Length: 96
Image (cartoon, rainbow, N blue to C red):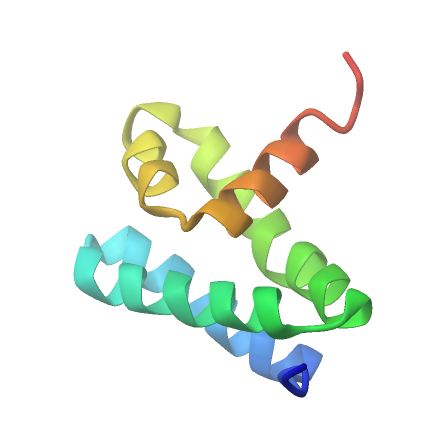
């Protein structure tokens, strides 16, 4: 088994800010690269790392993309499957 990717909350927060800026600037290529990087961290990480990605990366991303769904759906389609599943988990977590 591969060693989990060691990542700190500060590093993930920086990736989050970079991703949100790229989304607002419409830089799709950079967004895809950042999504892939975070997806790799999520998949290779242990439960702590996965929770960190969910709370520090997915939650702010979900908030931004759900505020304006008409353009947010474009970026939701770009999410790799593991991040897309985590996004859906957060959206439907309320049970409403």
